[in-house]
Length: 349
Ligand SMILES: CC(=O)N[C@H](C=O)[C@@H](O)[C@H](O)[C@H](O)COP(=O)(O)O
Ligand SMILES: C=C(OP(=O)(O)O)C(=O)O
Image 1 (tube, rainbow, N blue to C red):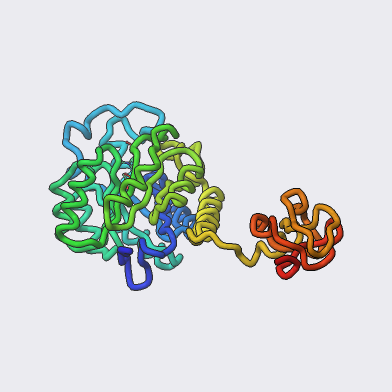
Image 2: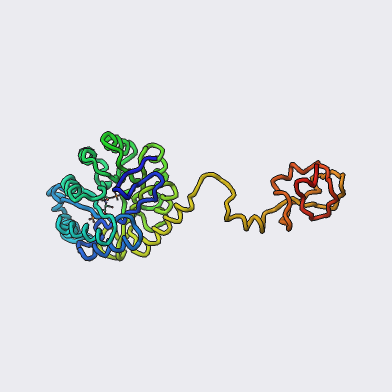
């Protein structure tokens, strides 16, 4: 199975555990202390990585768009530009955050929301660069990103399958060190729009690790994505869901994130093998409750066992496994047998 190399220690895909990204995004409210608390919370929750969103505003947005009024309860300014400026950390603040994450001991990166930010992140030597759904139609940027030969995790919200194939073709023409994440870009995503089985379709179509970036409320859908085979899982993290900001509503609090990580690991462990076999932990139940073949009546040596003469019961001691019922019928007893006595190999011929 194809693996993506994040760094010397961390690989994604194949038989590696699901790589869990705690997406801070802009849930830091523009406050570096909150950002640090979220980095620490992500580490304590057991996430593999914590992620921000790096934007060069004049590269990502037109002047007119930045001047657009942004008058809603989640806004940090009168215009979209003011709002975004409030939420954007400077390069030196990013350096401080990356340093802090390093001290805390968690991988830290960001989504490059434009080419300028991409270059900054390459220079910062982040373990991989995320390209969010806002760029799933930005083929120019995707080509540029692919040419830089850094590991990429790419979300595929807001486009259809044919565009996703194009993204795959663009990146894989340069390298295979990338993952695609199924994503629906709504905040929050109604459950009926999650279309989680797209993950399986991606897995059947693409020879790279597939993951899920979930914007729905809660953890159930994210957990299901892992059961379906997601090798990367991204969920937003917040200190408090009632905080101001567009994404808090679809985010997980630190205890919820911790539970998510725990449950993902339980699911991975439980997925086990597709080979159905009797496992050691079942032996006590087999001993206690599995049924076996016993005599349904008292019969003597030389008599034939007719269907009604053999019963299937939980017995002590056990007889032959009840699966052998058909093999016993119409055989001749070689011993006298009492009702309820177990029937074993050698009792008939
Ligand atoms: C598509 C995309 O970029 N989505 C991101 C990742 O999920 C979001 O975090 C947005 O940045 C956020 O919802 C924008 O909110 P506002 O417009 O209020 O700053
Ligand atoms: C928009 C982003 O992600 P997604 O599309 O996965 O929500 C992002 O990472 O910035």
